[in-house]
Image (cartoon, rainbow, N blue to C red; front, side, top):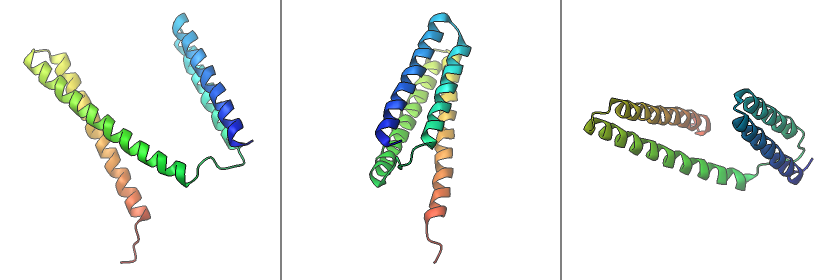
Length: 132
C-alpha cells in the first residue's frame, strides 16, 4: 500500500467516525459513538502497519515540529489568559463557580507547562552530546 491509498482510506475512516458520532448524538447513544471511534482508531492503526513506504520525511517532521510548537504556545497562552479572566471575573462578581473554573484552568495550564518542561529536558539529554 502506498501513501496516497493510505490517505484515501484514512479519509474514509474519518467519515465513518464522523457518521457514527453524528448518529450517536441524534439517537442519544454514547456507547455507539465510543464504539465507532474505537473501531476507526484500530482500523487506522492496522492499516498503518501495512504501509511499505515511510509516511514521514525530513520536511514533514520539520513541519510537524513547528506546528506542534506553535499550537502548544497558542493553547497555553489562551488557557492562561482565560483562567486569569475567569478568576478576576469570578472574584469581582462574587461568583465562586467561575472563579474555581479559572483556578482549575490555571492548574491545567501549569500542568501543561510542567509536562512540556519534563519532555523537553528528556529530549535535550537524549540528543545532546555528553562528550564534554
